[in-house]
Amino acid sequence: MLNSKKYNFAGEQTKAIHAGEAPDAVTGASAPNLVMSTTFVADTDTGFSVESMDENDTWVYTRWGNPTVSQLEEKLAVLENAETAVAFASGMGAISALLFHLLKAGDHAVISDVAYAALSEVTNEMIPQLGIEITKVNTSDLEAVRKAMQPNTRLVYIETPCNPLLRLTDIEAVAGIARQSGAKLAVDSTFATPVATKPLELGADFVIHSLTKYLGGHGDALGGAILGKREDLLSLRKKTAIRLGGSLSPFNAWLIMRGIATFPIRMKIHQENALQVAAFLERRPEIKKVIYPGLPSHPQHELARRQMKNFSGMITFQMENGREQAARFAGKLQIIHYAVSLGHHRSLLFYLNSDDLLKTSFRLSTREQLQSWNCFAGEGLFRLSVGLEDAIDIISDLRQALED
Ligand SMILES: *Cc1c(COP(=O)(O)O)cnc(C)c1O
Image 1 (tube, protein in one colour):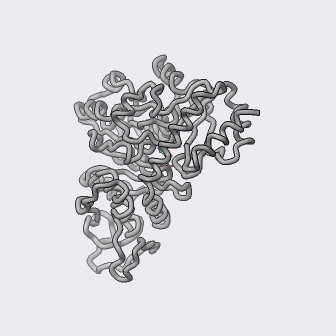
Image 2: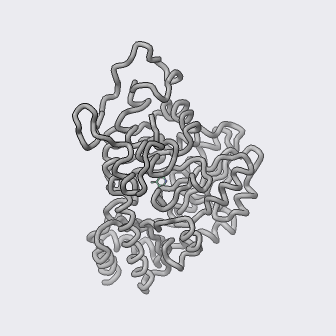
C-alpha cells in the first residue's frame, strides 16, 4: 500500500503538501478525495479473514484499510522518514495497539515514569493484570534505564519531551541500551513532531504520534499513528490493529491531511511564539519557574539543541497558589483558552495539580523520581500550548490576566 521511497522531495513543506497525494486519475481533482465507504466491491477470490490479506490487495473493508486513511499514512511515513505508518482513531488507540502487539504474559517493559497520563494509567494496572511486568523509570537517567533492563525486557517506552514536564530523553543513548538487551524502543514524539526529531534515525524501532496535536493542528480531529519498519508494522496492522478495531475515520484522516499541509510552516511560528512567550514569563515576578527546551535555563538545553531542530510550542511554568491562579486565568483570559490538549492553532492553558498527578497517574516513589519531578514541575504547574496567534496578543493576554 505504501511506498515512501518514490518521493524525492528535499523540503519538509513540499513533503507535507504532496506526499500521499496525486490528482485523481478519473476526475482530475487536485485535492484528495474523501472515501467514506466502509466496504468495497471485491474480487471473488478475496478472503473473508484478514489472515489472508496481502499488502498489495485491493480495498475490502475500511477497518482493514481505506484509500483516504492510506493517503494520510503515506504522508506521515514520508514526513517521519519511516518505511510505513499505521493510523489509529486516537493517540491512545495507537499506544494500546503497540502494547498489546508487543507484550505477552511473562514479558517485561521499561516505561517512562512520567508520560502521557492515559499511558501511565494503562501501564499502572491494566497491563500488569495481564501478567506483564512493568518497571517505571526516569528515562532521562540513562543509568536508571540500564539498571531496569531484564533478560525478558521486550520494550522500552519513552516520551521526549515528556508530557507534562518537558523533560527530555536522549533517544540515541536509550536506543543503544535497548538494542543491547534485544528490546524494542518506542518513542512517543508527539511533543517534538517530525520537524524537530526523527527518532527512527536515532535508533528507535517505533514512533508514536497523537495526530490530534501538532500534526492535525486545528483541534478538530482525534487521530494517532505508529511508524516504523514495514516488517514490524505489517504484522502489527494485521494481527493487532485491525482486530482491536481502533481504526481512524476517513473523515478524520482527510481533516488531518489537510492540517498537515501547513504543518512545517506552523511549527516555525509555534517555536517563534513560544520563545517570545517563555522569555516574557521568565521576566514576570509572579512566575517562579519557566521550563521550555528552547531556553538556556532548561536543565537539558544542550540535549534539546542536539536532538530537536525545532523546540516546539509547549511551555510549563510554576506559580504559587496554583489552584487560585488557575481560576483567575480561566476567568480573565480572552484569547488563550483554559482547556486541555495542545498543538492547536489556538493557544491553550491548563493547570496540573502535582499532588493529584503524583497519586493517580504517576505514582512516583523513589527520592530520585520525586527530585526530578520537583526540578521540572514542583507545585502550581501550568502547561501552556502556545498557538499561532500573534505573539504580541498572546503576551498581552497573559499580562492582563497576571495583573489586577
Ligand atoms: C495527547 C497525547 C497522547 C494521546 O493522544 P489522543 O489522541 O488524545 O489519544 C499521547 N501522547 C502524548 C504525548 C499526547 O500529548
